[in-house]
Length: 485
Image (cartoon, rainbow, N blue to C red; front, top):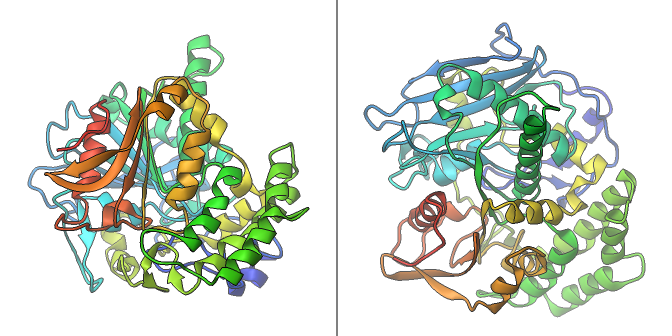
């Protein structure tokens, strides 16, 4: 149920189709609502159940999604409090689950459900093109890893309760709390000392670095005796098509709209207007700079509003922002919302599923978190020795490779000089070149050809959807640098 001032702006807040992760506000992709309400209370729960603060409530082996014989799955809730419940769906590894690492998956938004990744990208099943059922995914990321999809913050997807999170740092604290609950449960306690990985995309360019840095800081506090809890054995961070460093990434919209591997997106006059919006006094560049020089929430929110009104949104033209080979809106990847709601009671879902939460997105827009730079956290994580992969698809406009590569080139880490000495190498999968990459120490960057925003969802050449993604996922999870096969 929607309350208060937010109800007045909901007609203007339109979540994109399931393929998308960033809402449209008054026709502007990633726009900012005119008014905010940051004190939303709990959603109405369709299937009321007594919450169990500090514990899990789950349904095991319900037969939905993972159909590989003998492979365990469970879905349900971790109750942070009596009014905050985080939804998860866990899949044991198809091979050697008793020794396999644990990989977490988060979609972005902010406010988008991680079920997007499960059913459209890298889960054990994929939604069919007619959205009527799911089929086995032979390239699922639970092939050799235990895989945990988490809907966060509270209010996203099947998660429900008081919707108060409005920054990546607040989200990190809740995810840490959820994992403490999850790993203390007797059914999952054997995972406590396993290698842990964070994988994410889109707004995950904020989430991934912030979550990883928070985990490392909490581990240090546990060691120092100032915090009690289970240390998390973080070994890997993977970020696909992520928004991390807006100051370095926003010029990428100008470059990609004018020239990309496929076709220009808009006229030169549109590019000229957007360029002026970037460079003018008080324009996008200045606003992002002010935001990250101790700017208030309102300054950062104004930066998001101005930049997305005048640069990100108009430069997309008539093409789908997530896959520029299609006009907007692209029906692929297909919607799974109706199907997922049809199995809601079987899997333990307690609210009507939606792919994106307007309330959560509005909370983040109010704080201007979008325009805050997460690159320092990313540098901390890389320097801490966490194996890190930044990847993207070259047919994605919304977080295009021009911007992502500019962010990567701006990194200041112990591998920076080595990275700059490297030339791109072809990334081959089964002898078929499907991208290009660089390795430097435990850091890697990869651009996948022909892929849109959701890299594992796309085919390239003769490769089936997901095969290239499973190769890079497996290599990084094995603590190896990228290599061709």
